[in-house]
Length: 338
Figure 1 (cartoon, helix red, strand yellow):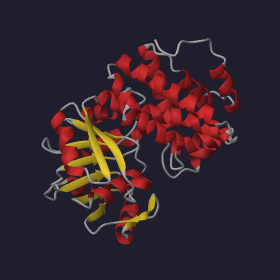
Figure 2 (cartoon, rainbow, N blue to C red; figure 1 turned 135 degrees about the vertical axis):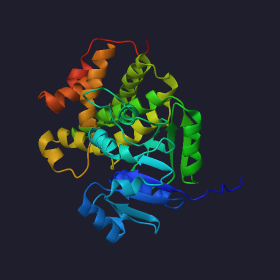
Figure 3 (tube, rainbow, N blue to C red; figure 1 turned 90 degrees about the vertical axis):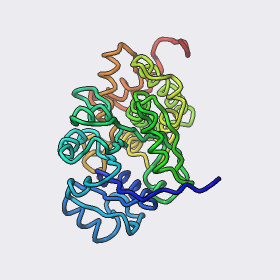
Figure 4 (cartoon, rainbow, N blue to C red; figure 1 turned 60 degrees about the vertical axis):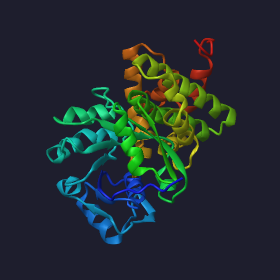
């Protein structure tokens, strides 16, 4: 196959957590990357030390990756603006960035979540804050920052309402070790990205309780079933949930040692309190907030979400983790498929 010849361009990445940094390191092999970090002290430290020792210490920065605390400087003249912000901070950052974003810039979101107050997906949050926006591409799939930054092969999905925008992301960012598929089901891809984190907490609880492979397989399979059930009711395509952003991301998030959401669940299963777990974390476990969003969506669309409900009972209503299994296993008999 002939090697693709790409012209270098500027890419702005808003958010210097582990995933934003990993994508910056990856994309800097092809383009000029400006990484925006909201904490001025951290931004100066990352730029000076040429690595993010706080969130991704193993990955040194390529020479054309730079970090700034100035959001206007980050966005100016960028061909692509990529959002890598925790979901509950996204709206505020978009509002801050809005004066500097132009209609011709391609916007990409790698944020996984559902806004609790509005039940908007992340692309909808971005669009709601921009008066002129060509649309948003969601980039999602089974990709942990620690592995992507080391060049370990991975595959991911670019989803957009406009097929051309998804293909542009493929064209600009796909490498021999970072394969990108396109998908027009933006709703399904974003919903799967958010809700798999809830199931990962359940899988972590099972691990913390020292349950076995059978338990985890059941949680993952039935977890995917309830995500699909809600997604289809909301208008997503069923096959999306069997793909990389559905089953693929669910598998890696429920099993990986890098998964923050599985880690939260595991500590809950071992007896730690949620407040103590979150206080000790440097990064965000999106599944805690997304459990609330999932349950609100289930109520809105009249869809039963038994695993999300059990996780919510542990997180917010004092259910002991050991009781979660009984809550799920003693439900009335069901058919597997409807």
